Length: 357
Image (cartoon, rainbow, N blue to C red; front, side):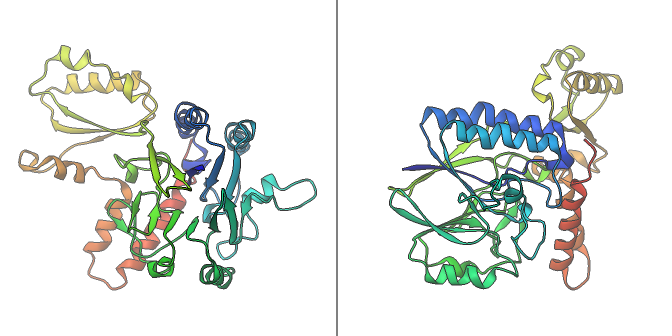
């Protein structure tokens, strides 16, 4: 039996941005659902964080979630299972009130059997899998007992485990110790958007880029074979965040203006200036990008001693906000840098939810 695994879909990301919604839809329309149909995949497990905002949902986003994901899976006859993640819950210390149950609870007020706000063992083609939702203050004891007592060799959940890379260059210092999951052959999880594993715990990574922290970090979904225990990665080829390096010292006006900039349509672009000798040429390139309908454009320039910098150093200078904040905190001569780093990250993520569309 083959099961499609997806997680951290974050409907409503970036302040209900329609640009991001359309970017997500391109993945579902052209990659995800065609793959399920072509390979006759009839079972799906979502490993948490279906939606982005914990407190409310935009009706436009809700309509897209219902019509272009949930109902689409049902129409294809896909047996759908959803584990509750931290972004799906209203309160931080309990899974009791969560968006999925509020949206999809039956008219009788019963919790749908395909949602997992609490740990539960489920049989998939003869293979028992322990479904593990977001572990918090309210359900910690229940979750630890389920992990201790289960005979399942496979766990799937939405976990926060110490020592894993949340996104490139940022490591988790909070959560459950990794050794808790040593009894399992495989523990697959959502939550951290960077794909990684330690041989037992597999962070699957999310399906698409949402922030600059995701730049050039492979995104996609997985197929899990219950018989062979193989985990196949299906990569999403679409990228939201792009960098364009500008150097007109060896270009002509024609070569710069005749390039095809259509690939940058509806993407976030950083133009990194390596050498600018003709301001008019540069402004013309920017006009070309705007004509191509980029979603967001940032120019990075004025590097000191640029001619002595390697490409990796240039990229480093053009890093995303989270990386800049993290480096700033690391440079401070203070105690509790880890706690301050986490606070800055949480504040940044909260700020994204109020970003203008």
